[in-house]
Length: 239
Image (cartoon, rainbow, N blue to C red; front, side, top):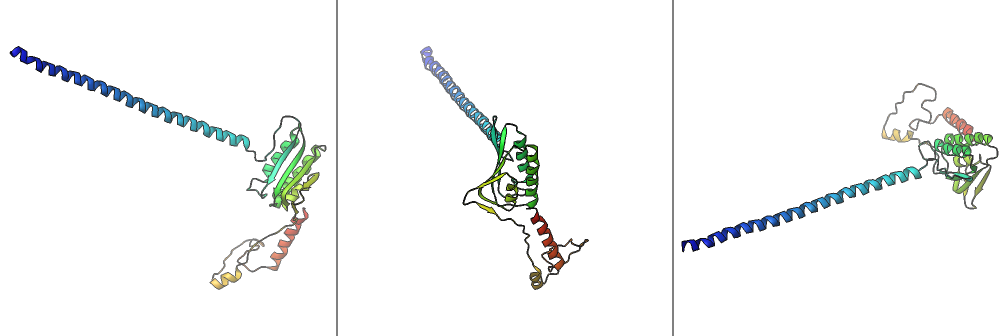
């Protein structure tokens, strides 16, 4: 009987061992599934970074290839070159003399180009920047007398823009285009009465006859006014 009574005890031990093995197998499966999910998430993130990096490089390459300061059209065979002059003409804008002149020079130096179109939409700007472009067109036309230059005006071509356009052989404009406005202006403000009312004393130390020329906080001098008109007349004669 004693021997018979030991069997349940042995069976329980075996069952406990089997239970442990069963739980161990389940834990292994769960662990493998968890690791597989982690690896899959890491792979997704890794490929996400790769695709984002490729997209970023594509955008950078697209911007580099599509951007040209002079906006000079490119072609391999015989063609008409085009340089776009848009916006205010100034040294710190896209429509500055360096960018425009670079495009115009490229057009003249390209032997497959048979002519140049200046597509213009500008209210004008710096007479210095416009004068540089005008002078360069005149110089380049002497190097290729058979190379026609046409100015095609869109909405507006005034002041410094027209200064550039007159260097072309012909100017084309729509019946509603605004063209002209040949002139030179100098703007400023006078605050002499204001600082008197506020009680502010203006102190300006200069060395030179015209160093405080047109100071808005000082009364207008007749000599300064005469000097300003001489400057404006000289610049206006360049047109």
